[in-house]
Amino acid sequence: LKQNTPRSEVFDYFNQWHICYHGTSAHALPTIVECGSLLPPGLVNHHGDKIKARDSETHLRPQRIVPAGKKLPTKKQIFTSPKIEYAAHNVYAETYKFKGKDFKVALAFFIKPGAYNVGQGTIKGMEGDGLEWYTPKHGVHVLYGILV
Image 1 (tube, rainbow, N blue to C red):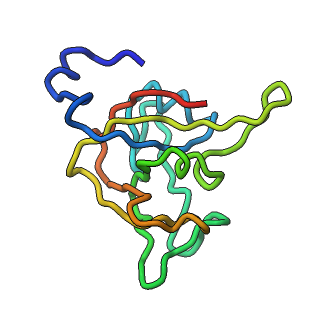
Image 2 (image 1 turned 90 degrees about the vertical axis):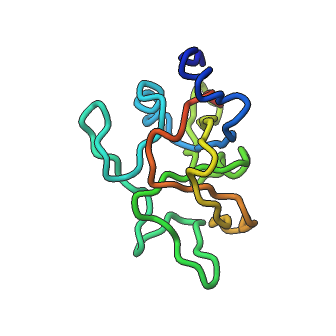
Image 3 (image 1 turned 60 degrees about the vertical axis):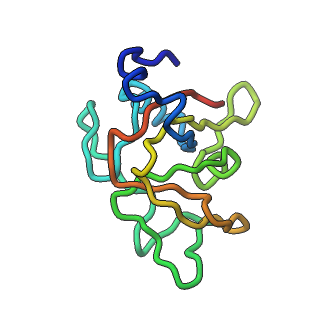
């Protein structure tokens, strides 16, 4: 994707910011691309749609777990991962069929250093440290690429 050159030069995304991945649905893709960033739950996007959390304190998606002794940070957080394998898991990236083939959608972002927290993985079988990066802040992600 083409970056806004003056902005990318000022913030030096390519050299100073970290790369992370966000699994999503094909349905959500156009709105995220139009916005160029991720919005936390509770905010309203440019189409007037309120962003909804996919998990709550009382309901987790299948295969998602809360590590022992931890509380899942679900309130108004944007979740990404430094590992594409984690972001592309079915918990985050929905599987779709197109012409008889399965595909998933994930996005690559630059994320501002210091603007996110690092957490343990919350997918059953992928509980390693540092697999989830989360933040309530918007404007700290810059879309870098679409992965299909």
